[in-house]
Image (cartoon, rainbow, N blue to C red; front, side):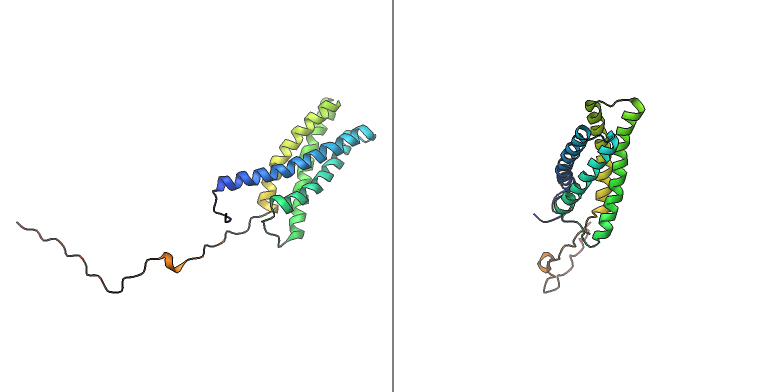
Length: 171
């Protein structure tokens, strides 16, 4: 199927599904690293989570560039990576800000509570990331102009056709 031959909602649904697939992998990496650091080191919870988020951001870039947005403009990789890291940093602040507020604002610091607020933070940050990545980082290429086929247009008649006569009124 040609690019652009499906409806905009179908394309968006396909993009969301691919974004989600990469996001699931990044989330598994994020949770695995953060829980390992929480249980195997003496790092503070938010610091360990920042490290886990950074590792997941690296995995996500690879997935987004080579899977989700592989058909997008690749002409300015340095700019793309810079924007990706900038917007990912904002997502990191959102995600870890929610965890920070839960732990240091409300004292919710059990392993279950950390993971619940980690899910909440990731959810909010994911909405921001999806919007920013598709809008600013992995820009869509301009739509291709359709190629006009000369046979698609009617050919003028070879001989001029007479104009129709106006009807005469008979009284």
